[in-house]
Length: 199
Image 1 (cartoon, rainbow, N blue to C red):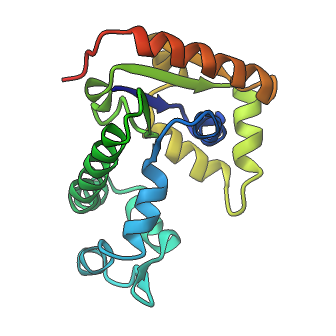
Image 2: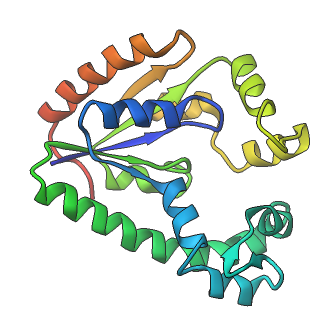
């Protein structure tokens, strides 16, 4: 089985691209969805202990947590030390199940793939991109998003140009879904023929 790492900065269309991979019959691991899942369950007690007042009814309140960690790198590191081992366990379970199902290719959708060294654990990297103007318009249309929040998020992410330089495949979502669907078929065919390179 070949593993594709799917990444891209916020607002580039990565979630839509992940959905199109799933529609093509590919098992897709969604790191963000897994964070939501563990925040609603197993991670909540440890997060509350480290950051009192950040849970409500036994679930992590992402807005409260974000207010405590977004501008504090040390707090962000403490949070990652809690969350990352749980995410790794879910990730390993997903890959084992995908392998068992006989899937030739699986996709791991990880926003901070390069930033966390995750590109060493995949066989090919797909970077999703769009224009800078389109990106900002998409993100600022989200509820509760501000220029300040957006800039703080972008600071944590490798610049789009750098991601594209390090990608095996670049998917541009500026022109609607059909070109992306067609490109996904090409990527799946090419990846299935690639040698396994992950560590």
